[in-house]
Length: 100
Image (cartoon, rainbow, N blue to C red; front, side, top):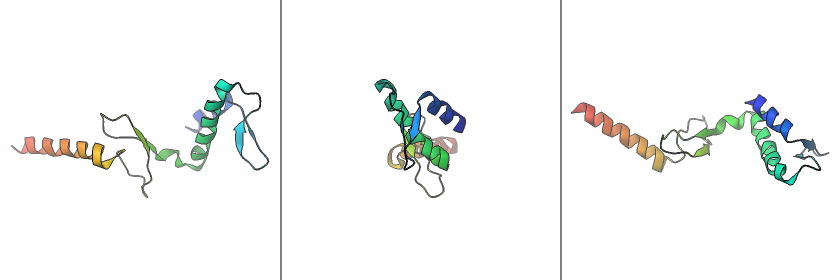
């Protein structure tokens, strides 16, 4: 994943300020500035190892991604009330069908 971040950053030049902040290079075409800002924002979680906290919801009908803030990084669903409940309800129904 770090190699991919390097590739994106290379395609969207940035510069470092005296305070250490990354910003898009001067003269970058306006259409390339938003991707450059996104690449800059993504570089920090990649460098700190927090990028693994960005996960896709385990519910197969959901297309959402979420930031896992759980202490042990074990969260599976974007919402336990919605996607988690759907998943658990299907598992329960499947167990009930097998039991009969």
